[in-house]
Amino acid sequence: MQQSEMMEKIARGEGFIAALDQSGGSTPKALKGYGVDEGAWSNDEEMFGLIHQMRSRIITSPCFSGEKVIGAILFERTMDGEVEGKPTPQALIERGVVPFIKIDKGLEDEVNGVQLMKPMPELDALLTRARGLGVFGTKERSVINLANREGIAAIVRQQFEVAQQVLSHGLVPMIEPEVNIKSSERADADRILLQELTKALDVLGGDGRVMLKLSIPAQAGLFQPLVDHPRVLRVVALSGGFSRSEACAELAKNPGMIASFSRALLSDLRHQMDDAEFDRSLGGAIDEIHKASTEKVSA
Image 1 (tube, rainbow, N blue to C red):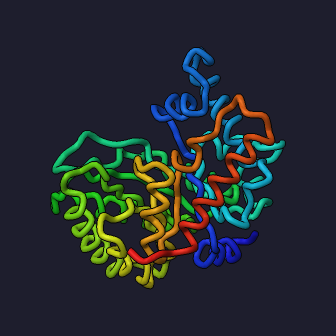
Image 2: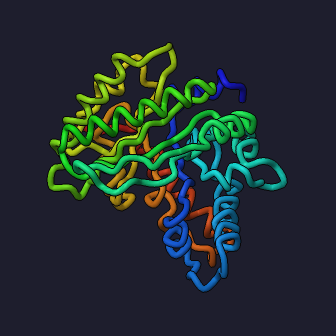
């Protein structure tokens, strides 16, 4: 796929984006969920080797193709690795799946009810390398715990500053200001976030477009103005701690939003499964998430 073909697939493709970007502190948890206990590795290199094996198995599964999975978000080490002897982004592209890269380096401590992204001093070098490997876009995550306008405005401001840097490298930024679905102020936080994102989109410089990765809103359909905004390429949803069945049920109530699930996609997979069982389990999850992304229901 050329850049224009990837742009078209992400903008209009009938499918969802797989999040295969667990990193750092989340890797042991991801491996444990896959049935690999911490005693299975003795250092970070071995740990990341095990998670790469898991991701390679997912990417090479017959059911993991561009027919239903239109994109995949990678961790930096996964991007730099290989799948079946090819650079991971190229292996995805050959399967019809558009590659993205997670670029944030984790979260700052909470201030004003939110957690901003940590500094990314080497971002330009990472973006240059990613573009050279054929990566289409990026993903950067912040977290909103409370309906604090000052905090949410700071998150949106930081996200759009990073987005401009990404756009300058010819990549498409996926902005992820995650609202904590367990927050007692979730609905109010959703509404403030909608307002702040709309303001930032309305004054976005240049002619580039961004993607938004958002928690499924407490009020179904709330983010429709973002889905329809001319500067937004696509709005995708994170599962945010919902089980797959819960996340799919909530996502199906939101026209225009497609999934970008991680735990909700991979939760039933185990390394002990034989290939047939693994493919059957992954295929079932893909079918369920694809349906919620493409077949909408009344709220």
